[in-house]
Length: 351
Image (cartoon, rainbow, N blue to C red; front, side, top):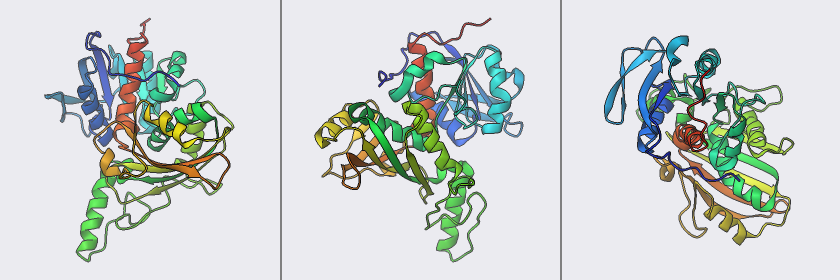
C-alpha cells in the first residue's frame, strides 16, 4: 500500500492548471475540489468546445472565461485535468504532454495502455514514478472498490472478486441527470417519459446495462472494472466478475463486493485494516448502513455491511459507497496532482 495522500502544501509554487471539459459535470467538480483542497493554482485555464467558449465558470470565488480547446491551448500549462470524452482526450492530450504539461485523464482512452499509470493514490501512488507526462484516472466504480479492497489485499491476499454495482445517473453525465428528472416528473403526471440517454426508461426501474454490450455478453463498463482492478492492484491474472446496473439515483455509486482471499479472514482484523485505511469511513455493523445520500458531497469511500461470506473459502462481503463525481472522478484526479507535487514531479522539466 502506498502512503496516504494529503492536500498539497500552500507554500508550493503556484501552477498553471487547465481543466478540459470545464463546463461539464465532472469539470465543475474539478474546479470545486481544486479550490476546496487548496491546490496551488496560480492561473486557471477553463477549456471546452467551441459551443461553450465565451461563457464563464466559477473558481474559488472568481469568474473565469471559458476558452475554446485547441492544440495550442497548453503553452505554459503545468497540469491539465481532462474530462471531456475519450475522443477529445485522444486528440488533445498528446499536444498537452508535448507542451510540457502533466495530463491526468478522466476518460478510458489511455487506461489500459501499459506505459500509462492508472492510479488511485491511496492504493498505488508509487505507479506515478513511471509516468511520462500522461496519467489515467480509473473508472468511478473501480476507484471506490479498490480503495476498500487495497487494505484487505495487503492483509489477506486477494484471490478473487465479484462486483455488483448500483450506479447513479450522474455517471452518464449532466444530461442523463436531467433526463432522470424529466422521466420522473413525466411518470408522476401520467405522461410518456423521454428516453434518449439511457437504453430504456430509468425512472422507477433499474437497468443492467451501462455502455455497449461486448461479444461475450458483458458490457464495456463491466470490462473496465475487470481490467482496471487487475492493473491497479498489480494482479494481472486476478479472477474478477462484474455486473453493472444503472439505478434511479442522481449522484452516488454503490458496489456490493464479494472477495475471496488467500489467507483465512479474521473479521476483526478486516475491520481494523479498513478503519485505518486512508480515505475509508467504516460504518459499524450494527449501525446505520451507508447509502449514496451519505457519500454525496464528500471525498471518502464509505464501507458498511462488512461480513464473512460463507459462500466462498476465506470470503468477505461488503457494501461500498462513494460520490462518483468527486472521489470517483474529480477528487481522485486532484489527489493524483497532489501526489505528483509531494514527489517533486510537478512541474515537469520542460525541454
